[in-house]
Image (cartoon, rainbow, N blue to C red):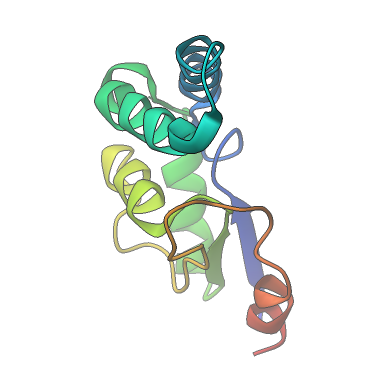
Length: 123
C-alpha cells in the first residue's frame, strides 16, 4: 500500500511569512528581558495573525485527494503543536483528508517528531 507523508509548513501550507513574522515579533518583544515567556508571545502572535497570513498552495488539496482516490494512506509530519496544525489544515481545506497527523501535543513544538513518521509508513 502506498503511504505519503507530508510536511505541513512550506509544503502543503504556505505559512512561512507567518512564522517569520511571529519570530520577529517575539525577538523584538524579548530583547530587553528574559525569554521566559517568549514561546507564549510567539504563539499569541501566530494565532492572532494566522488567517490573515497563511496561504494555501494551489493544487495541494487536489493532490492529496488524488492520492486518497488511489488508496494511499496519507499523513502529516510536523513539529507544530496539534491545535495549530489542525487550524492550518482546516483553513486550507484539508480537514478529513489525512489518516494520521503526528505532531506534538505539548505547549510547544520542540523539534522533529522522531520515529512516528517511520512507524506510520510501515504500519
